Length: 207
Ligand code: HEM
Ligand code: HEM
Image 1: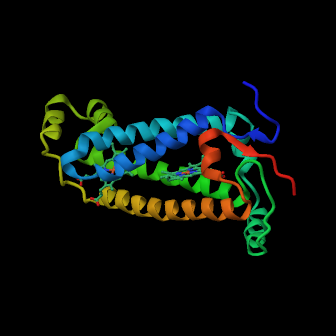
Image 2: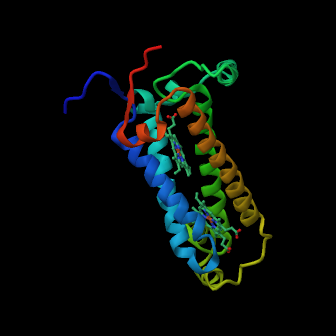
């Protein structure tokens, strides 16, 4: 496909599909977190885990701007970028800027913690992949049936459920900051970052 030279390709198609699928499945997981919709909730969570696995691999071997090495900056570089926001003329980066890069890492770590605590909370109910492996590897069959029928429930505390809820709250905070960061950077650099995450392209900067 021919493109004019006033824009460059930044986000490959897989990054864009990753991002918007993540948004959709995060919303589904968020609104199905109740007991009645637990199965759907778990499946939305599994999709998110698959997306995370993909993103970790792509962060190592993916296209230029998708790599962690492209957007992990030193604390000093992050501080300088944040300071330069106050001057209203921040330095422009084609990929994630240093603050954005830090946010991406926090979002990915937050999602990993949320998924892991979710899997453990599910296991505590005797369900999900962790429960299957615990049952089949460590518990004789008769006891495994007891487990499945809930006799092991409530033996621990609700630690993982609480941890899961705390992770979700942390994610909500990160997402608010994420959207704020996208808005501020879009305004100051006079470029629409949301459109770039849709089309994959950013206008070439002439500063
Ligand atoms: C409708 C709401 C959202 C919008 C408009 C949005 C927009 C964006 C934009 C524009 C970027 C690229 C930032 C840059 O140019 O440096 C981005 C990256 C990212 N966003 Fe969002 N976002 C939204 C919701 C979310 C949610 C809910 C999550 C997490 C659950 C999330 C996770 C991420 C991640 C992980 C990246 C990094 C992409 C990558 O390099 O793989 N976003 N987002
Ligand atoms: C990463 C995306 C996820 C999000 C955004 C998310 C969100 C939520 C929310 C909002 C709740 C309700 C918490 C409350 O009661 O206040 C919840 C509960 C729960 N989640 Fe997740 N979750 C995610 C992943 C997972 C995964 C992967 C699993 C396991 C398969 C899981 C298992 C559970 C369980 C067992 C509960 C408790 C249900 C109950 O008994 O009330 N979650 N989650």
